[in-house]
Amino acid sequence: MMSTQILGFLCMMLLYAAGNLGELILQEKEDGTFYRLMSTPLSSKAYLFGNALFALAVVVTEVVICLTAMRFVFDIDPGVSYFALFGVLFVFSIMAVLLSLALGFTATSRKSVSGLQMILFTLTSLLSGALIPVQIMPAFMRKIAEFLPQYWVMNAITTLQQNGDLASISLNIAIILGYALLFFCIASYKFTKNNRVNSFV
Image (tube, rainbow, N blue to C red; front, side):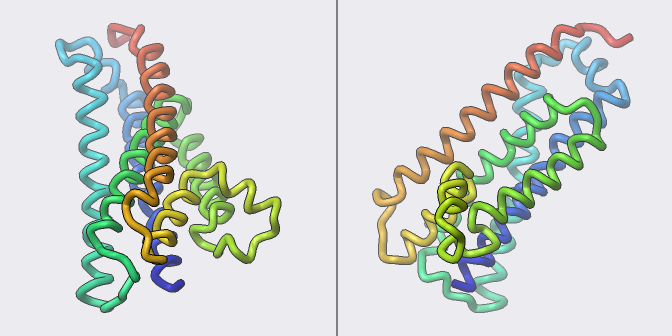
């Protein structure tokens, strides 16, 4: 239970770490850097992929540091293979980065996206069972939790702890990837719309 809640807290921290990407994009817009880049031969796909790859590298590094500390510093036994844990958290990291991109291209200012992320990440982490065990929640809150991506991460970890194999969490992975695809579509649409400004004024 303790290791599960530690990983739940890590999920929230991963969202915040990935959220910096959205703020970075908005800062570039406010500084005019974004529009200057769009007026250069740099393709929009290269810009999008470069930012996403950098954010993913930062988030995955955070995952590796946390799991390494759990294993070698605090000697915590999560009840599941660390490689399996890394796989689940890596998929969640991809989703977190794409969510950050979607928020970054949707929001209008750094202050608005910062406030939105604080409310969204904290509230969904609380409701999904990442910070509070979902088992002690009322029935209607459990139903709400099932609509949140963090719930499926925590459920996958719990399933693995109960001697489940990778096949038993295939639905969880598919749902998390479904959220990732949704956020990717939102980010791509908003980016394409913003990309109509082809010159820096």
